[in-house]
Length: 249
Image 1 (tube, helix red, strand yellow):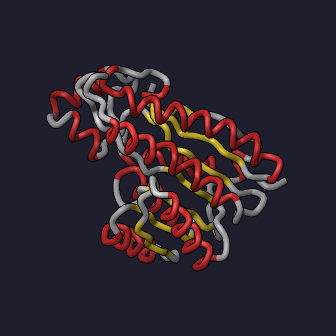
Image 2 (cartoon, helix red, strand yellow):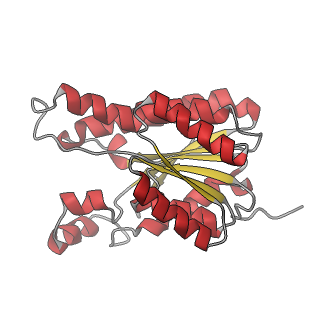
Image 3 (spheres, rainbow, N blue to C red):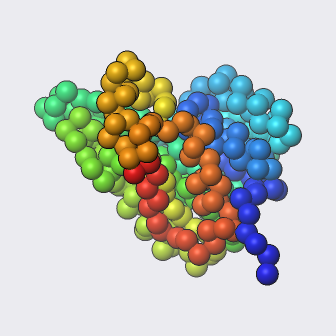
């Protein structure tokens, strides 16, 4: 009996929203664990920068500009990944936006459509497209949010989109499971990201947020990596359709 590890040696991993924050941390984490990485985000330049970091760690990398809310761009992304590496072993649906409307009345059609396109429509389509090129043992990791479980007025649209992503996680896990492809989600609490720093711009505000967490601090971006590696590999081979809450308590 072999003991499962968190190695990603030989895997091809596609990370959306991979140019910064949690996406960058996961792209580099998978590279350090031995994977080749496709880094996707809306702007090519920042993706190229992360791809260079992946290469410096010894892995192969491909940078692709992609707006995941555009289904044609999703198709182009998957085609580019498969063209470069022949397959996709792990898809990380990380790209997301979290606009904060002042009230329900302030939610515009544009804000609603854009939020659902990036956080829900894109991951659904990318899962379908990537799964067609995944071998048995493949994995989809959706990056959700605690807002999906505990919505507030200021997160109303974002929370609804991420709640939809939770549903997509469980539904696609049922469909893809018989093919040996597992689908799980990381339900993230508070991490140090650009989005957090925009909403909580001062150390005092961040300290107040940290006080609500039992570990007493806000997570660093690289603290998502271990959970992502776990969900991508054999150590979680019987875990499917689950929402893993990563929030420090």
